[in-house]
Image (cartoon, rainbow, N blue to C red; front, side):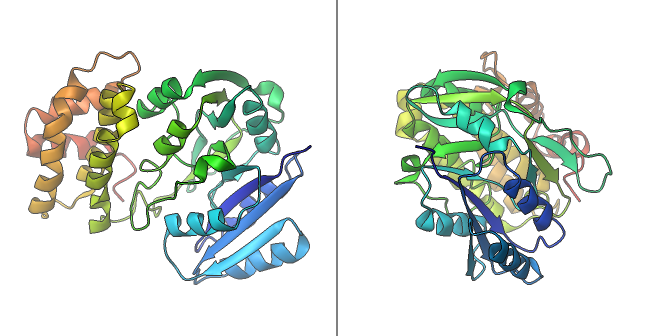
Length: 328
């Protein structure tokens, strides 16, 4: 029997991008889809555009709700989905026609509950160049790992942490939801799905175009909500499975990168906030600086080493060289 694939697309004020996203999903070579659009209280034309697409294609379900953020929108879709498998697409991105086909082949391996792309093909919205995406699954390279090994690869950022770029067997999410009110909600969630799987296939194939925008959540002006990275840090390094699998150093590496990124976004005059994050960076920098795992990112190690020169120097160097394009 042909499995039903649920595609979850949270939508918020993306009238300039949503048509391209939806057209790419509707153009999939794999047709047995349930497409859930969650209009998260958009104040532009996004909600009406979703309704128009829903009128044209019976596979589309549109949910309108009050604004609650990305996690809340995804959770609303998870409560309503009927698919055998679930995948996520961000509403300002777009995908290759073989996106679902490639992912579905990835979970066809025995006892495989998740297939994950190495990542998306990045492009800046402000620039005219657009990425070249694969036209068929013949261009894909597949390798299946135990969930422990795949989780290690993800924590060391050799594949993307984001909820998109992956397909999940529905029951993986039975007891998992995205934390509402968090930034970096994907970091707080995807490792839990990997723990639920027996095997995971990692796929190298350019089938997801990831739009980088200066006004995106990660790059927008600093907000106190970004301090959720400190809670995520405590949760991930204290996770029982991560510790049982001896992946604490990998988890610390991922958390360090996330916290350092937020540290560099804090305005220079917010000294107390900088110190609050800095104390956690100091707590874990030794593990990062002296981690000998071959998958360890040099960027993380260098940042940890530079942090030994003190908070102000680390802040200055990081903002000047480590956050290009993300401080606007």
